Amino acid sequence: QVQLVESGGGLVQPGGSLRLSCTASGFALGDYVIGWFRQAPGKEREGVSCIDRSDNSAHYADSVKGRFTISRDNAKNTVYLQMNFLNPEDTAVYYCAATKMSGPVMMCLVPGGDYWGQGTQVTVSS
Image 1 (cartoon, rainbow, N blue to C red):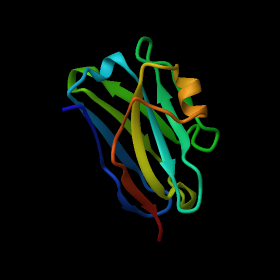
Image 2 (image 1 turned 45 degrees about the horizontal axis):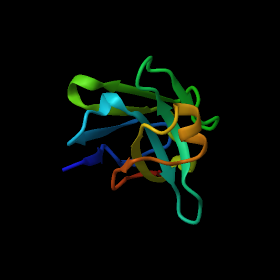
Image 3 (image 1 turned 180 degrees about the vertical axis):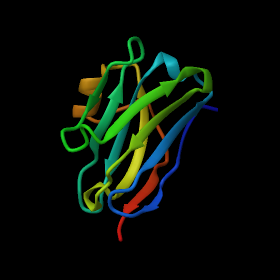
Image 4 (image 1 turned 90 degrees about the horizontal axis):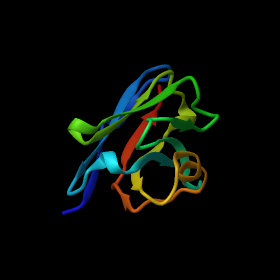
């Protein structure tokens, strides 16, 4: 069964950190461009960070540059999103997706994927 499962979300204080994981089953995640997206209540889904399948080059949204880092461990079939210096504007449901149809820049700018996870809630609040 093809599946993406996100984990690692939760409640964190402003300035804190979380690491999200996106684990694939039923397919080799290393064959796909992987993206992290988020959607806050009343807002459109936006691309946060996307990583290429070949050279691990990555694209970041301006709002997270310098704070978030995407990485992949193909041996574990997992992609991570390390989120530091979180602020309340980062509060959203975070999704991961996999695609073979575009590179990391386009995937992030025009959210799309062949497979999507169910999402994990991140809440930044004091």
